[in-house]
Image (cartoon, rainbow, N blue to C red; front, side, top):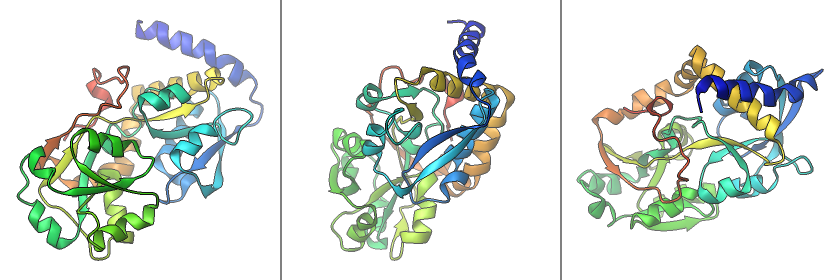
Length: 283
């Protein structure tokens, strides 16, 4: 569909929602990560800016407690607890809720560095291929899409139901490494990484997109978010905000100088816009 026509259709879809807004609309969002203050996090700020750009100002109301990603998807909808969430997409998740197919983190969650003890990190320095990497075990969360991605590539995965326990499992030798996104790993190393280090010279990469999701019963909200993101991209505000929040992490990661082991992502829906390089980060 031509871009101009697409923009007009999105604007038309948003009109009923915008017209109904006297005061800013309250949007309920989940507390899905311990990182940073939720309302000042990148995805929350981007959501506010996108909806403002679409003419639909909002105030965000996070849940007081952490909510697992799969449970958050079940809570979407007018008669449930949440209006919008952001999480990694998969075929299953796109069946549960409406994705807005703009990768918010430009694929950063598919660029993975490895946390490990210094002893394991020394052994992993020599890893050159996926076959060699398969000799090591990886710890991951029980409900995380990444768990299935790593397993589909022949990697041994130790599954944990507890986020905090994953770091302990590395220190206890129950798993060798913990693949974490560039956006997460430095913060986690500072707060949970006692006795751990980032494996040098090595990086995993698979295509992965984190989208905003809304209930399928909320097409006007979905259209407003999509329209706002398109306007932010066109103005350069999207990329400016991305670098403000992630530029330091990317500089510290030095992805361009690392050995990259590519993995396939069988959970990725065919509608993922991999054909639009402007939407993705490349080192």
